[in-house]
Length: 177
Length: 230
Image 1 (cartoon, rainbow over the protein chains, first blue to last red):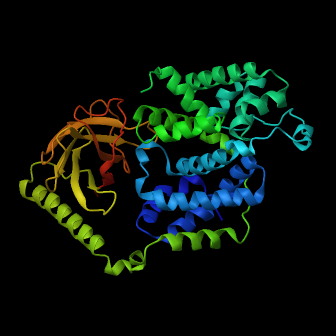
Image 2: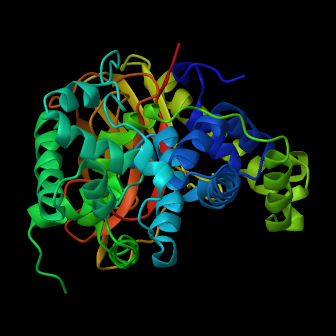
Image 3: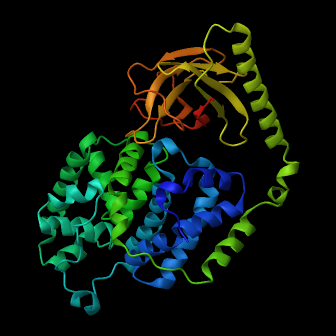
């Protein structure tokens, strides 16, 4: 059972990991394991591979707990960053960079992401973007699509996709500060 | 060295976090991160901005095998000594007794001098690795704090200690200035909101003139959180 984020002290658990307390790592796993696995699965597309990534992520969290600096961001955010970057490294590894198969192409893109009903600031900023540009950002961050894959998915030239992403990131930075 | 502008660096950081860089570009960024505080700060900012997008990925229950697998790997990595019971951990007791002594000294000195009101907040800053206490912070009014060293620390000649604070909900840490080893420092907080419980304080090792980017970049020397004194 995971607690609401506001009631779970991620930083105290990380500090306990740094002291060698394995029960704290287990607490973190119970709290965020399913969400981290969900994020990894969405990126790499395969459950077994996603479990490998979450396994690797928890080892990294355990080993680097003492170096975690709360001034640089939240402990929860750090766990997600560690997991995402392991998954992205895997995805971008050239030997695995493949164009979409038919299964991917068959999915409809309309309303793939519902920005309504999310309260966080990022969602309000996303709503201000043109829908296609918003799709670029979400397909990249959530699905791990490369520029080429987004271009293929949206049927938009590669150069346009690259420019949209660059401008959308600038707009998001302006909006979020 | 690179001659990229702040704008280019921010775009690189944004695409790194977004995930659209190629394998080569990702490796390049990951190689630069440990040495380039500006790039690291830009990446950290993008991680914070985009984190809530992880909500779009639906949570998935891991298989029953995943945790035992993690546990086995962690046990293999953990050296034998760390299986010692906490009861036998010398650094823990050293740290606790030094922290107790520090608190006694602070509270005792307040009793003796009597004039200042009791501190509303107390922070013990400990070393991140062995938890040895190095400084205490006392705040007898919420507009000014005193940083009191418990010993002398060695700082390399070309380095300086920089003092930082961050409360929950702040965008990032704020510098409270440079600290000389062994010096008691009074810091007015009039540019900041009042002290809060759990507010983070830390000392990092920076270049002689402090962090070039206004955010901590060097290793943490001591860290602690404010506790309200009843």
